[in-house]
Length: 268
Image (cartoon, rainbow, N blue to C red; front, side, top):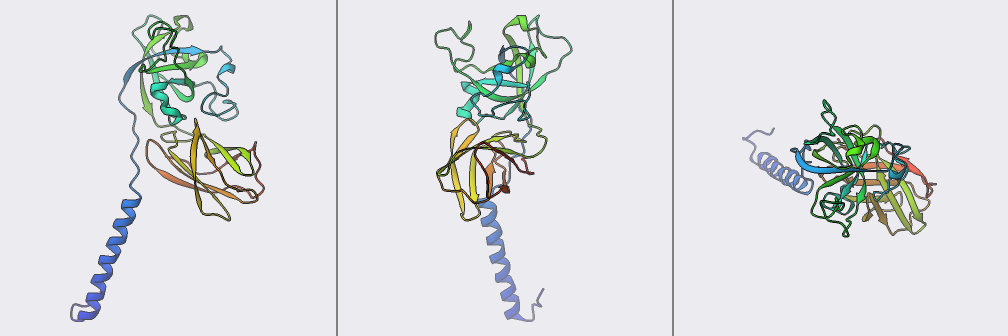
């Protein structure tokens, strides 16, 4: 630090400190700290199931995850009612669910954890309490049958449950499944940790800057750009935690549609 007996150097040092503090302030304003995502309070809802014990009917779904076995989700999944689905931005979110207030509940089972992979659409031809379980504004989980059978006997059909959002624990990095063509890149994002969800996404080719991708459906984002022959990087922001991560060089320059590419970074 300069001596106060040297007025010019001291003045220069003071101005540098002011400038540096302004830069730090601007950076923090542009990049707010992530929100620490903790489990939410328990809330009341209802749950049903669809499919059979193999969970084969849960494959695919509105989130675009395809084969849930090969993509790491297995049978611990659920379709969300419109109120929870949030136009697809809830895809990948994780919930603890426990059966309550029913003789069909399994005693001694505190809860099971499921990932949102599908939409349970409204059934306007049925009353909300007798078949139209997913009609707005109901909060409802249509679970895979194996997941439902962890908390209640399947003969119950529908049970009252308590649920809460919890952080997703993902093994390995985020997976990017490519679709589209030479002028349109469509990417399904899977195996997301932390909040489990994606609010915004960008792609960057080795010959481009960052290109904003628009939300197509579910956990799928798109970019209308010519990106063939370039290695691709992705930037993602979590809908829940607001955390942003960059996955550099996820796909090589010879990437192909129909392929899945994995990064070694993930949300906390």
